[in-house]
Length: 96
Image 1 (cartoon, helix red, strand yellow):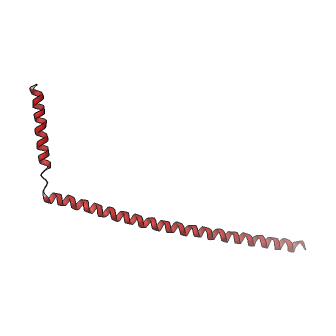
Image 2 (tube, rainbow, N blue to C red; image 1 turned 180 degrees about the vertical axis):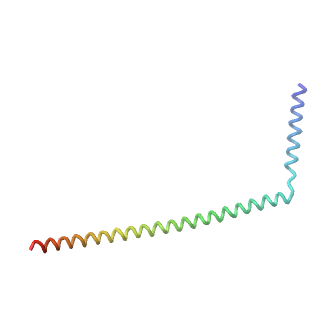
Image 3 (tube, rainbow, N blue to C red; image 1 turned 120 degrees about the vertical axis):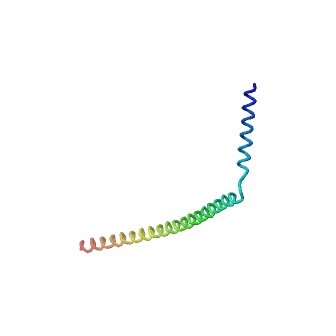
């Protein structure tokens, strides 16, 4: 029974010592931690802004590519129509 009380007392004493050791943070230590956190937050904000910008640029590039695809398809259709007209004219000329 005494060993259980001794263990409990030791655990309690260790916990109190540990807690009191953690409670002694100097103003300089706190300021350093706060500065590090503020720097990390600022870097995260800058990264988010860069990501937003990259998304905007990518969206604009996708739109431009879509427009270029439509223009190419239209040009190909025109080319095919012209080839068909030339073919028909050639066949008509050869039939005479």
